[in-house]
Structures are given as structure tokens and as C-alpha cells.
Image (cartoon, rainbow, N blue to C red; front, side, top):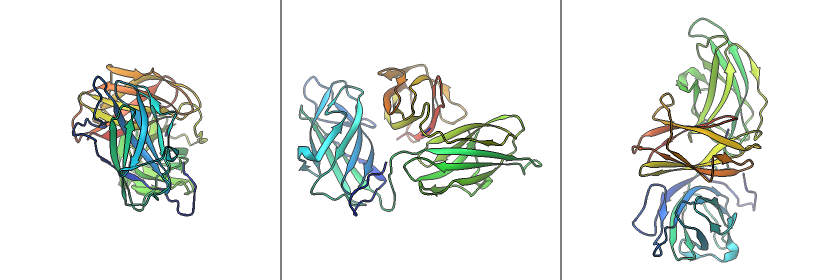
Length: 347
């Protein structure tokens, strides 16, 4: 399934709203495209951001056809000194490489609600820009992870049977629990107590959710907790059999996605394995609902179908004719371990 920086007393963390800004008029979904040197195709994809008052971490990927080398970084047209930024794992990005740009300007204190334009310039002179607005009253603390640690079933007449699940926020980010699914079908929020949506903080204690559901003893059920960002956290249970589940954290295979890029004729997923075991991707499913997902056969994996443990990444490109303003449902299934299930709205 699916980090808080501690600094001076001014530190606070924010969720951000990304506003696309480009160096030229040419733009493809999810990409910021610079003014290209002849014969070269450089593209940078900007993913999520992590903030404190003195640092911004930008998640980036080279989605072009050529190697690129980061040479300069600006904030609001102010050129930063080379000591005020660092890219990981290096300044050199091969096609398909993903990494982070850590920006620590000495003369700027990042403030909530203020827009900041970041410009990355490569050694060829191409520039890629985007603007980030810190949103008041929210927090960005890294990654989401919800564990279902217990499941208790209560039999009754039709319409009165319930299943109680205990959940823990074991990630590093406060989340909003949006809804519950059983066997990949959304349960009406009125059938869940306490009723979603509600905020579930990392500092909150374990929470019990009681779901009114006409289960059958002995039948298999996948129970999913879905957050407002579309992440789904699923465990598998048998109706009528109470279970206590030890929260495993990052043990085994733990797939998550960094970003989804929507391009003409295809969808690109930037996949990460946060677990302690390598993952081998077996199949990818896409559909316009959780029930009608179909296995995709025109799928490209870069560099391979193996996602290495402890933060390893791959890029999955799916040839798919998608439609704007449509919600899509994804399942990425490894040969061993739990599948990554999530949903995203096309731009």
C-alpha cells in the first residue's frame, strides 16, 4: 500500500496547488516543454511538491527523448546560487529518470498562500517553469498509508449486519477518508459510521469504522479505504471470521505512484516501490469504473517490469484513448504482493 522536515520555529508544511506555466506556448498534458536546441527533445515533468518554510522539494522526471543536465534554478526570476539547490540522484537525467530537486533559498521564506515560480534551466539553455501556490490551512507531510488492523463481523437480519474495521494512519501525511469500498464497489457514506468524508491525522489514534453491509459468512471480501486523493488501501477478509491484522508498514511489496501524466493517445504512470521486496509487475488494468477495468496489452515499462525495493521506480506507459474530464480507475498488479488500486480524473 501506500516525511516531515523539522527546522526553525518558523517551519510549517503545506499542501500545494500546481499551476502550469511554460517557457513557450507549446505544452502537452503533464509536461513543461522548453525552447529546444536544434536536434534535441528535452522535456521535464513536474510532480508533487513537499514544503517547509525554508525548503521546497520538487519531484521531477525526464520525459523527453534526450539526456538533460540541470544547470540553473530560479525562483520568481531570481537566480539561485549553486549552494541553494541540489538535484538527486544527480544533475544528469537520462530519458525516463526520476528524481528530486531540493531548493533552499537563503533569501526567501516560503509563505502559505503565496505563489512561487520555479524555473529549471538545462546546460543546453532550455527552460522549464511552473508555479506553485501554498494553500492555507493544509499540510503536506510526504506519503499516505492507511492500515486496516482489525475486522469484526456482526450477524443480523438483512439490512442490519455490520462489519467493523479498525484503521490506523501509518503514513506521514494527514489524509481525508473519502469513502469505503467492499469488493471494489463504493459503499454509501450513510452506511458508514462515523460518516465520511472526515480528516484522519497522523497523530490520531486508531479509529473504528462500522459499515452496514449484508455479508455472507464464509465469502471473501476485499475492503478498501479510499482517500480524497484517490489512493486505495485494501485488505482481504472472510465474512464472519473476525481477524486482527498486524500493521506491516513497508514490509514486502508496497506499490505507490508519484504522478500520472496524460498525453495524446497514452497515459504514463510513475510507479514507486516503498516496500522491502522487489516487485515484478504482472498486469495493468484500466477502466471508467472499478467494475469494468480491462487488462491492457499495449504497455511499455521503463527500464523494465521490475520495481526495486526501498524506493525503486519505473515508468509505465499505457497506449490508451482517454477522454477529458473523465474519471479512470487503475489496478497495477504485481506477481507477488498487493495490487496498487487508485483512481484519477483526466484533465
